[in-house]
Image (cartoon, rainbow, N blue to C red; front, side, top):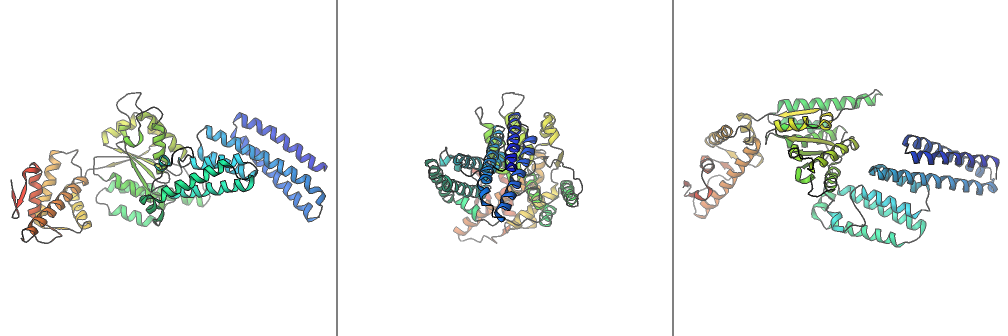
Length: 493
């Protein structure tokens, strides 16, 4: 063996001993540094091999290739141990990355290929040892494209393992499982539609225009513009080499029902996608029932599933204070909050969480939890709509449904809204109230038209809401529905 090559062996052996200690101590910074040194040594060795080939010194190549195989095998085992460390710490994305690095360094290792496959499937909560139906429940229209790419990648890796190591029963089982779950996905109409859907092109100008078109909410719009400008400003600073401050984009929305919190949250998801903060820009809306389970150990799993569904977009938690019922320390809602807080840190570059609910309850909820106080710096209050703004919403909703309203009917509609606000100042529903009344009016219009038509009587324009329909709705607010009928176009009790 060449003296120079012996020195390489000795140097790498010393590095291997140091690496074993770093892995044992779980000193990730030292591990990274020593991996860098190891790759530098491999690169230099490959340069020497190339020079020997160019000089046609073939007699030396066997020893050099043996050394190269030894070094890459050791590096592959280090990546494997590092992956196991990340798995023990539930850092699944980092674990998957290290498993992949391990299989690229050392090819003749069937088990490592299979471990990588299990690791990449785990990122989407897919498990080969679980029933297809159970796995299918975790695939949604939001993540189905990523899942299908993951399955394709898993199949490719298994086939590579077979070509490198020969056919094994475990490989056959995984390939059969992949085929089954792909077939199950294709048989679901909602998932097939999501797969075929062309991604929406989201521009900042378009989303900000949609925001400005919302009725009222002037202070809400101003705060969102400020956040958007701040993100864009920091992006410009990074591009020009300046330091850029990182600030939490997680939000608290407080306001009464129907004040537009969900609509604005959906627009924020699209805005942050347009400025490059989020990769998908979708909204996942959840409540307590979607996050909190009934049994020990299930809440974290349930919550993590929703977080993974929202990754790349916004997780919108309505009535967030309901996660904790009173001061009961045994309430599983506390586990959901802890899981969300941890995920906010782990996924801070590709997930925004918005907590929403009634103003007083939200203030008390945030104030009672120091962990939430430190992470939710942006608070946006949604005021109730004025009566004039609610009438604007009425006109907009009617236009969207291709209806019109006579001036006389509009007066009745305004009177109904005003009375409801006086009776229920905090819980009247705002825009939701308007939408519900319009839906009631459309139902009443439909019944009126069909009844008139069946009697060969005139029923007017199909797109017009007049005072007859509005009178019916106004009377029905205070009268049991089973006592209301329409005879010959007139209201009868």
